[in-house]
Length: 145
Image (tube, rainbow, N blue to C red; front, side):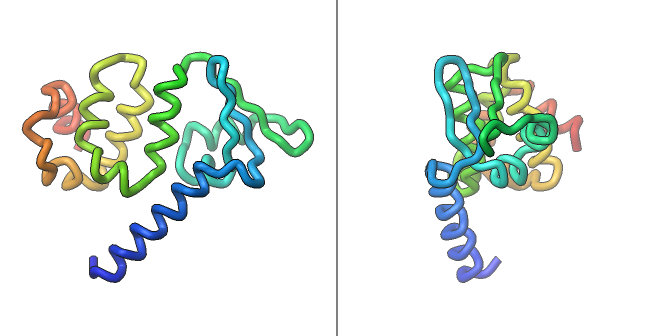
């Protein structure tokens, strides 16, 4: 990838990150525990097969879609939402992937990361943190590809 296209990708990722952080013109409220997150259905739909399914079956109230997640903690949800930040994810992918194997509650995160690695194994293989990845995460990577 050329230096110009890399810069454009970083800028696009940053613009995308601002959209995730902005409540302006949101049309989805995701309730997790006692917190509510105001998000954009287009972003959720494009970035997550889980939310694609949720949005397909959700009902609208006053043009706002409400989704309640009961099996997810606020901390895990914040991590999942931040995974949409491509630049951040690329920098921290090995750590995120390894961390996803530390707790069974992160199964969705494991699947998400594994799907990315199936297409782009160099993200983790070329990482400086490759030697610190948990054994079970590496085994999963080997048997997935």
